Amino acid sequence: MSYMSIQEAMNKGSGEVKLHGWVYRERKSAKVAFVVLRDSTNIIQCVIKKDAVPEKVWDAAIDSPIETSLKITGEIKEDARAPTGFELAVTDMEKVGVSDTYPITKDQSTEFLLDQRHLWIRSRRLTAIMKVRSTVFGAIHKFFRERAFHEFAPPILTPNACEGGSTLFEVKYYDQKMYLTQSWQLYAEAAVFALEKLYCISPCFRAEKSKTSRHLSEFWMAEMEIAWAGLDDIGKAAEELVAFIAKEVIEKNAEELKILERDVEKLKKIKAPFPRLTYSEALKLLKEKKDLDVPWGKDLRTVEEDKLMELYETPVIVTHYPKETMAFYKPSDPNNPKEALCMDMLAPDGYGEIIGGSVRDTDLDSLKKALEKEGEKLERYEWYLDLRRYGSVPHSGFGLGVERVVAWMCGIDNIKDAIPFPRTMIRFRP
Image 1 (cartoon, helix red, strand yellow):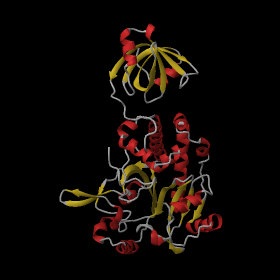
Image 2 (cartoon, rainbow, N blue to C red):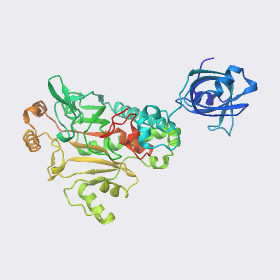
Image 3 (cartoon, rainbow, N blue to C red):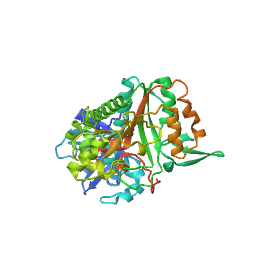
Image 4 (cartoon, rainbow, N blue to C red):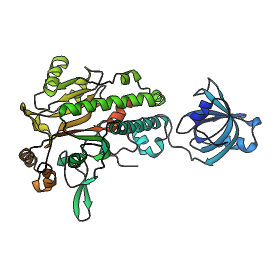
């Protein structure tokens, strides 16, 4: 008989099964020992009776501290009193890897758990989050591939800034200076004239001196670029992508959402299309509904975004932010040069911006002026400016912050738990 997962054994429901996993909980008396075994699929209560098993099995049962790895054989049956509704009457047990005294116990600080992340990642909570994260990644791939997008891998080391030089991580590259990528975008714009519809999921790096629950120094972005497309096109793609991700998570992670105590009814409301409003309309709403008077031209901070999203139960797309606050590649709206042809998607319940996107400026002189205004040397961007010299066409794209979406899907309050090993301004271990 071959080994099966705990979930497979529970699906079988009765009869003899062979399991392997780790001790999640344990307690014992003089005659009975209880071991809650965990694997990647679930947990199950295992009962070892001293008078029903060989002495070596009993010895193993009473000396298997938390996180000891075991091979167990026994009879499975339903039992409503057990933690997951099933119990295993053990007939044989073998220790595989003995565990020292496990350092993680109840009610330990967040910082301690982050220090012990290499062990804490085994917790049911983080395991559930990582499963949702896997579903989110899979949903992104599925969404774009079903729509004939090509996956395109960008370089991680780059000589150029994309989102402003102040947040670049500098890297020694032989005898030269290079930087960790902030976004794939400049390279995607090169490839869009070949592939027309492309996407990636890739790590990005921002040296932002921020200690908030929404920021990471290393994170993953799902980005797309599409030729012949405008602002409405990428807005529609963005809302369809987010709605698709939510649908996949609801369908595939019901048990994980229960463990995380996520209100699934909120996720069921995530259906395209989403409300859309301009930056100016957002300021008007904040003033009328939330008594917040934000001067036109000021970027929306976390507090303004949160107050705005108290008015909505689904994501909202905000367009036409002030041109002056935007990156060099975002063009002015021909109908109002003070506004940029750009968009952000804001999530409800305090999760903030999850997507940022724009039309890309195709005017060579405009791009040069914008780069010079930001203090950039044009010769470093000559390759990028070439894209406007050789058959440029209208094109647009966006980037989705994967960890922000994972945090929102899971209903967790800190983005650090949405990635296996978080990197922030003050945390770079383990």
